[in-house]
Image (cartoon, helix red, strand yellow):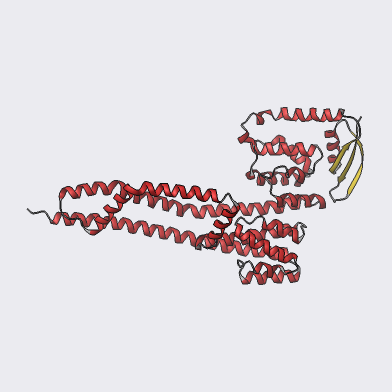
Length: 421
């Protein structure tokens, strides 16, 4: 029977090593996991026969999952959407007493969603070869970002994986709720804008040309309001296609320019100078940065590494450059509150609270309090923005419809007054 030399950690984080006899590598891994050990290294001491057995086991596993592979690649390729469901399922099984490896193996068999099952199967394949969970997650950068992988690695090293997963789940759930709330807040104003635009285009392109023909056939001079509407309709009918082409070309140019580093930096800097977009960008960035930094610090990541990881989550390139400069100042010995104050996006009261947290040694809880404050401010901003946009669009639409009604009625009265009986 082949022998395997292993190095593993128990639930308390203590490291042990030894030699284990098992028919195959997969059996050796399972025996270690039944002992409550998480293998970090497993090396076969004898010939290549077990390797063939391991490949046979892998082939059997692949045959068992053949229905999932029969689907198109686009249906089974994992995306970032599978990150949160995977972590929630994994955390539930670990709470039930399973090791991380057994939990992933069970998910690879039980999960029915194609992309999630493909992810779990690939992770289990890596784990069965002796890789750690964090190393297996690192093979899917499109699903798991750097901070997630580092936190999982820290949880494995300290034997605190379950708590790390719980904090990551809370973090990603709050981010998902924030995105959903933002989408819901923008949905109604966008709908009202499209509806109002449709009504206006219907009047300009369909009703007004027919009204002009009717009034012209009746004779008489049209009032100024009717002339304005008719001329606007003719202008749009004649030059509207040019405006549409220019808009499409502008969107394509903007999209292409954002694919370059200089273009993305320039457009992000421009967004910070626009009243509404700057409010979204700054409040969302402060919230995400504070919450991410708190999660990293709570899980044992050093301050320097946590700052580097947190700044990578900043989507706006112009703001990211400011955070990079702040991180460099912190590494040079400057206080975090002072360095972040130089970014120009933190309110003085938030910086005061952060300074107090630094002095009392409760930086992570202080950052969580700041994140809660920023979330409340962002919710209030979204509510105000939604109300203002909705009211403004409705007032503009009703005013335009009223103007059209006035132009039509005034034209009818003026033409009818020219009739002589």
